[in-house]
Length: 63
Ligand SMILES: [Zn+2]
Image (cartoon, rainbow, N blue to C red):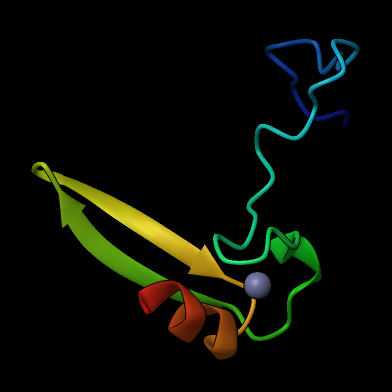
C-alpha cells in the first residue's frame, strides 16, 4: 500500500523546498495562498509560468 518513492524521499541537505512554489512578488509560499494567480509568458521560446499569492502581488510585479 505504500507509495513508491524512487528518490528515497530523504531531504537532509538543508534545501528541501525545491518543489515549493513561491509568490514571485513577495515570496510567500503558494501552498498557503488561497487566491493564487498564474501568468503564462513566453521567454526565449520557453513558456514560463509566473505565480503569485494574490492578484495584488501580480499587479505589483507587472509594474
Ligand atoms: Zn505575494
